[in-house]
Length: 225
Image (cartoon, rainbow, N blue to C red; front, side, top):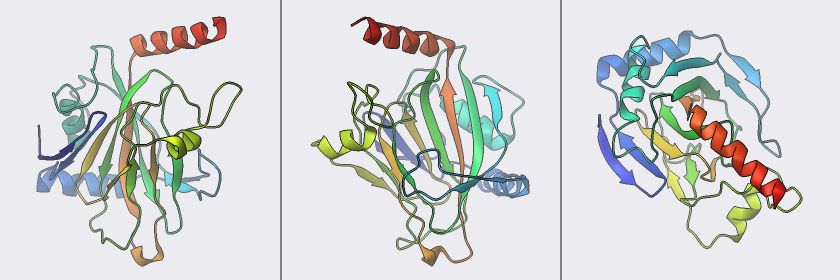
């Protein structure tokens, strides 16, 4: 695996020094060159919105991706990545800029055939009092919904009732996090101490046709039950 594996849980792993210096510099230039659109939070609640680029899609074995995406795709089949990737897998990703005051509430990114996701931190600097940490509860929560529904609690309620200890992942530059779909996580608020900087990430989801079919069958079985 490229970089240094600094943490490996049951459902997520963290790698530092992921890209070499030229690739990292090119990735930052590429990310900053993209047109961005302000989007309200997809989670809702007290979250503020963030800036998002257009979506990029690649097959997991793509050879024509920009270099840093190619580096990410190359890691998807490694043992340290906490999910299995099939030959029909695709990665769909976007660049996100989180301005001061923004955050993202508890969610699990389950559904849509997703098997996992990655978060690559591209901002050039981070300090411990700046906020914007990724917090992960290393437990399976595929059975809960973003919001409470009949017969189901919300992700936030699941976290509240869990006896597990969430792990705070500092958004250090050139760090990447690989996270299995269905794992509760949240982004802490970006504090004013970020100044003129913004939390900059390239975030993507890995999905497969097999996972789509399996998730549809799971939903059908719950209806039948």
